[in-house]
Image 1 (cartoon, rainbow, N blue to C red):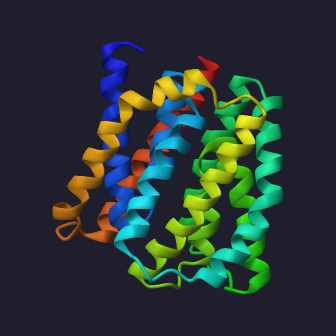
Image 2: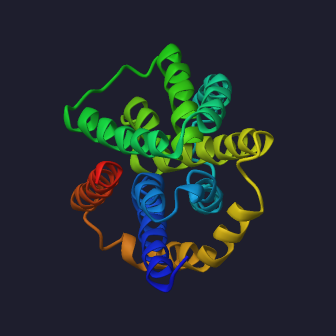
Length: 238
């Protein structure tokens, strides 16, 4: 990793962590395309490792607000999704995995922009958990399905519920990737230097989150994620 690449990844992680703490999403969608551009071997394992710490912080801040019953049903669905996602990481060449990451980002943004709001039924939560497990394990971007099915929750409850789900879900995904040999010394070496950037993003979220306009911040985060996804697609064909 060169100096400019390290600066780019650190900045991405800091902004992604700030967004994750402030509005409940952002780290995976923002970081996964950038990490794949810099070094495909760093995604999804390094992003998942960093996201685990950040979501634990959000859950601690929103203590007691999580919908634990809904979270449990979503995690039940995530189990088979995690297994399928781990197999995809092993089976897909780096180029196709990069295209999958870009496709997940663009699909999530498109569905969100279309205003699709599924009913929060148990079957929908389980299905969303399954899709999230597959996408989150294969690409580290498991947020869009859960954001859609839980979007009727208020801000603190949404952040707490999604954080509880992603904390447990990320650990499940990392365990599955470790079994397939994807999480190894290289991923750990890539994670360690970026931890300070994640901590900085979390610390900045405290004073900044009260000043952020949630709608504009979501729009900016989505635009950055789309830009990263498009750049990732272009790189595969240039």
